[in-house]
Length: 73
Image (cartoon, rainbow, N blue to C red):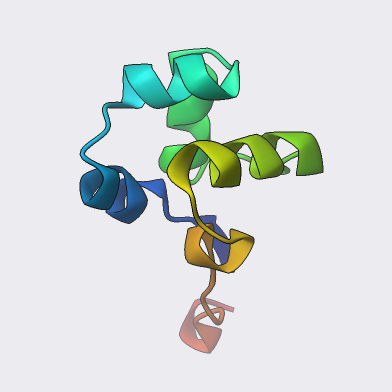
């Protein structure tokens, strides 16, 4: 998928665990893992806003656009 959620960098910068972030955002660690591992097909704006609030960052700090590899097509 060309857009990924890059939570690991912000977690490291904030010295926060996945479990702590999940608690602060109000989602399960399993759902946070889906976002972290690139398996999510969508993310709600409310969840994105909660992630940004907990990590004290902007949406652009978490969302990364990666162009498709045309060789795979």
